Every structure is written in C-alpha cells, then in structure tokens.
Length: 256
Image (cartoon, rainbow, N blue to C red; front, side):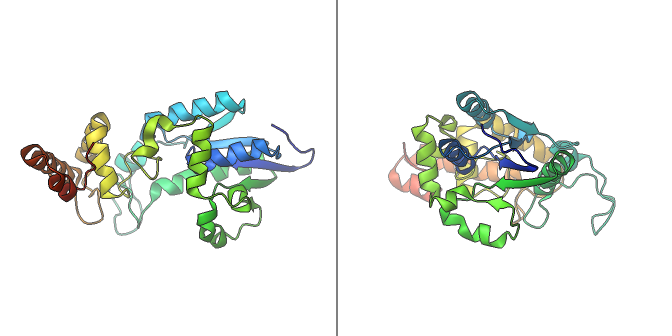
C-alpha cells in the first residue's frame, strides 16, 4: 500500500461487495496511492459470509481495513429511538427502513463522514461504481471522488468475474443475491427474499423476530414478514404436491 507525501489522503470507500472489492484489487494492481480502506460495519445486519469475506480480503491483500461502527446500533434506531419530530413524533423506533425513510443509510453516511472529518484535512475518495453505473457518478458532484472501475471501463459482471478469479466468492452469496449488504433489507426483491427464506432459515427466523418487535410494515405494499412467510410456505406446499416444472415456475423458484 503506497501513500503520497502531502496533505491529500486517498481513501478507499469499501462496502465489501463485488464492485468495491474489484476496485481495491485494481488499485493494488495499478499501484495507486492508498492511505486507508474504510468499511462500515453493520454488525448483526451483515451477512455472516460478508464478515468472512472482509477478513479474507484483508489477509490476502495485506491491507488493513478500518471497520467503522455507528455510535448507536441499527437495532437501537429501529426499536428504541424516541422520534422527536415529524408526523411520527412520540413513536419508539423508526421501524424497518423504507424508500421514504432510509435511516440506516443516513447513519452509515454520518458515521463515515464524521470519521473522515475528524481524521483528515483533505481527502480523495475511491468509489466503486462500475462502468454500467456511470449515472450514479454523474449525479455525484463531489470533485474529490475517483471512480477507478468507470475509468477502466469495468462492468458489474466483469467486476464479479475479477473477484472470482482472485478466489473471492463470498461463500456463494452472489449466486443467490444481486446485492449482499444487509440481509434483512426490506428493499430487496421478492425473489431474493424468497431465497433468504428457503436457503437461510436461521436468518429468516431472526427477521420474523425483528418484525415482532415493531409495528411497522416490512414492505411498502403493507406486507409484514409473517405475510411473506405464509406466501413462501404455500409455495413450498404447492411444489411438494405437484413437483413439476410448472409449479416451480408459478412460485418463481429455480428447480435444482
């Protein structure tokens, strides 16, 4: 890991997903200046496989990854925080994140920004947007950001292939999910929640327990976790009764 001898520091914004992992590997291949790699640790909300992946990247590259945690956990904001303003004033806990209230993203950004402002005067941040996500970079007007994957014209699929070539597999997470951040995110597609239910029963049980602790809906369409459990149970019953290609297709499940 090489650094430059001036006040400007080069920081890698590392989510742990395929794009940021490929970006880090690319930066090391190109011998680009790196002063710190920063990862936001969501605690028990992260896939266990993600935590294993972070350790593996750190060991393979020899680059220390700084793990940042919010002052108060996501569980606190979801279940315990007393809302003091707005139409939900007096409510205890924000409940599940939603498109309209992504409080988890807010806390992540605030934690990272506080760390940066407290530790660095001038920074340039490497962001892992892929070449087919140029619109995201175009929306971001921060001139201090650098987009190595876009500059090298590396797409999302190419980024994942690059990671696989280096031996990083996330223990199979990308075989089932498009995004591998928080496993309990309600903004996932139904198809991915179905896979969580079918393939990760322990995590689904935790999700059911989370729903029991809040009155908020899990989905914007008014569905709670137990509604999805009933749906997926009915699908499994249909498959067990008919066990044919049509049953799998109707349930949106890939036959294995």
